[in-house]
Length: 213
Ligand code: IMP
Ligand code: MG
Image (cartoon, rainbow, N blue to C red):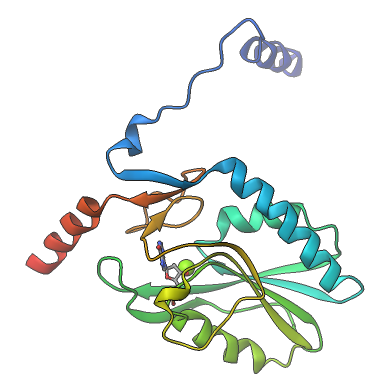
């Protein structure tokens, strides 16, 4: 009886005669200067990356290791397009810094799966200075995987201070602070479905408040 009622209600909600509510854009309009990479561009690029990764990892014992929290959207979209048997695990890495500069790196979650002798696909949202990767890589290599390949959605090569390169890159971008599609500023904007350039007034304002303390 109640199940029937639920079906009726859900039918009502999805009635084609009702216009779909437009996504509210007001919330981020003043804070995001412009869209750098659209949802459609991301989706298209991920399908291409997935084909490359499939080709390189076919027949291997694959463990995808994803760095929290910025990879949340990228990872979900990437692995659903990976037609491969794989295991999935997460490492928690957080940098406690002010403004848009990364600060001291802290590990907030360790790996649980055994990667010894397996092929690791290490996934991160963005390769910037390379400091995060240069701390994470030796930690994973110490667990003796057969090999580690790095996959990032974004790469900012002009900011690199450590000698790290990614094997799979979604998009190479200039030196801009970007948010959305998992990437944050002060833990916000991760839910935007696109990658956008944060308006400098947002981080200048935040920096002012931090610096006054
Ligand atoms: P790296 O250690 O400097 O390579 O920076 C890697 C981390 O810094 C990323 O995983 C992000 O969390 C953060 N990061 C670097 N650039 C940006 C950006 O433009 N927007 C948001 N987060 C960023
Ligand atoms: Mg990150």
